Length: 76
Image (cartoon, rainbow, N blue to C red; front, top):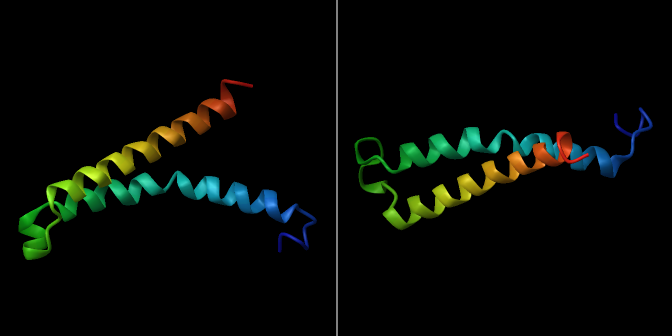
């Protein structure tokens, strides 16, 4: 469809990945919250170091998304 519309495939792919990156925090944050709870996960609960690493990754993703928005709308 992209080629049929005459769009640049590389740019379209990059833009689609940027849009998908904004959905990552909505998946990562609840996942970390649920997998750290013993009442939900039982014996499969995450260790504290795993939860900490996931929190850092989640925060990093959110910060990168804010930076992307800053570059897009403010820095021009």
